[in-house]
Amino acid sequence: MDYRGLVLSVAGVGLMVWAIIEGPSWGWTSPVIIAALVCSVVLLTLFVFVERRMAHPLLDVQLFANARFTAASISVTTAFFALFGFIFLITQFLQLIQGFTALQAGIRTLPFAIATGVMSPVAIALMHRFGSKVIVAIGLLVMAAGFVLASTVKVDSPYVGTVLASMVIIAAGLGLATSPATESIMGALPPEQAGAGSAVNDTTREFGGTLGVAVVGSVFLSIYGAKAVDGYRSLGLPKQFEVIVRESLGGGLAVAAHLPPAPSLALKHIVQQAFIDGLARGSLVAAAVVLVGAVIAWKFLPARARF
Image (cartoon, rainbow, N blue to C red):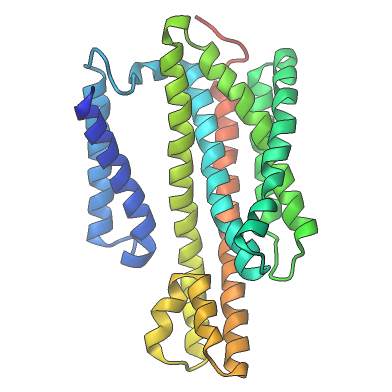
């Protein structure tokens, strides 16, 4: 067991995720946040240094010397970064703004799975004809278009409309991108390294998703928190509930439920609109990330495996 690699990777990634999540609360220029990010980079750099010298490393970082393997891994990471970050927000939108229960909201996210399942085999067929580079890049571009569409969602947007359409487009792009990218990761390696390739493929998905929730969530909170608090203060309401309103839409709605009718309605409108503004910004960040992934795939991902 590579205990050094395990400790360094957990500490490095954990510090990075913590700093990103807490950035809006502490302030991005806070010495604590800056120190956490610097320590994270140092630990992850040390992790790479240690892994390169291990006979049986937790992660064989030398695999990333293969351009096809690296570009495909980055494509998967960016896709799941954007997807997880968006799902983190859209499920709250479905429950707290559109009023669905957790089960009803979950059922309404099924288009993600259905569209991805439909497009995945189609993507493999297209990949065999046109190569991985084109299909992965197109898939990420389609995802970006879905996120841009999601950024136009309003408080009163019905589920069947912009919300559903954006989900289907994002999921279709995900299916187009990740199936060929996964094949590229495995196809870039000789058979004896298939196990390592599969492990890295899973790791990139989880790492990308974790960072996606942290980064997109932090971007959202930076927008939502500032606008919700400004609106709350404009109503002249008790200061002691300000923190609850800033922390989440659920907290803002809970405070609104205990107010007289007029300020309650006003606060509800304020926090819901603040949420939509944060959702829009988070969706655009997700779009930007997959666009970067598309550029990397187009520039560095070979169409076929090369040994």
